[in-house]
Length: 57
Length: 477
Image (cartoon, rainbow over all chains, first blue to last red; front, side, top):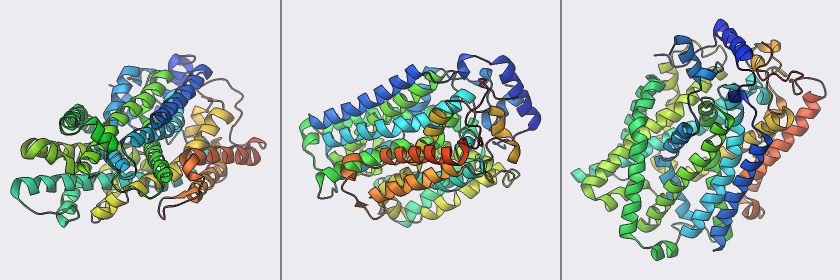
């Protein structure tokens, strides 16, 4: 079994067309929202702070 | 699944909505399965070389939180949004030739090192069982370790050459089995040691400077977090929403890694040895311990197949037409040549495990910094999907000769910055390393260099499609 494909032009074009026509605005193609990004950074910093707390205890 | 669908899932074609099969819970399971692997025990054991239990937990939490924090932003977000394999989505940051350069150097060496290490761990596990069951006296650096490591590589190659379906079949029972092993280790730790003993246990082989030991432990764990980069994006593109990619990647990997690493560190401190293959017989006895060791050996083989799969896929895609006609099985075999050679030096690979992890982190961290600066700051999360697949000058991401010099410049400067602050080979550090470590600063340096160079070289000249006029996610088809 060959497990990696080359990029067939017709398959690629069909996919790009389908994505362009049918997946506009769908949640699966949404950008990461600013709110989620801020929350993510806050959680990362929070967990890092917990690490320092463990060190200080 | 129809034929076209399955080929898209395996290769570099952008996935369609119906092909994104994982919700948040599914992807959390995938990440936990990945993280509960034997390398987590090894990292826990190696952390115990530098610091005691309490400092070790702090170092693991801080290092992994930071390393995974920027690795996830760099690897999963864009691949999820566009449904594109992670090395294809890198073309705007490094150019198609630039991606090839990174794949054939940083990514390839990183994954070859891990493969070799996992194979040697198999060799050590099997010889331990042999010593216990048959009274043989194979030492951890004997030729028999190499022999079984080579057998492990051969079996990994066989699984890999069968493709991702076979890998998935094995992983279905390996991942739950490793969770059982982790629980087993926890139970035996509770039975064989006490909280006070753990808290007062001395690190196994520390340097004289306590602050430096802690900084090295944090940096090592940050490097481990960053080293997930080569596999995460290609998995995340199978998720249904940005949230289903982001949080399970971060919290799934972090939670499972921490549990396995803490257990590994506690075992190492209790038994005074950082090698996970040494723990099982004293804890489990000759029968159960041998069974667990053999299970760990097999788990390492499937882990190797899993991590090498995405790398070999990347190699083929990054090579352009060069390797497109080479059979998959031959390509996989070629990948294993260097790990097979390294298997002849089992002691060296184990002793240099930390060096290898941190050295690969020195390059992966600024790579992540450049990717974050490109995708979030310059492109505002917009990529022209069709241009990712256009050839040569037809693509907006061709830059100069297929190389985005801002991206490669950022990696070179960021890595040089890292190696000046902390050189993992010579173990020389600047005093500032003990306060800021190296991965996060070098990622920041990589991001800043990328921002400056991209603006100077490309943005002002309208090269590289940095300010797409369309608001369409899907590009210009």
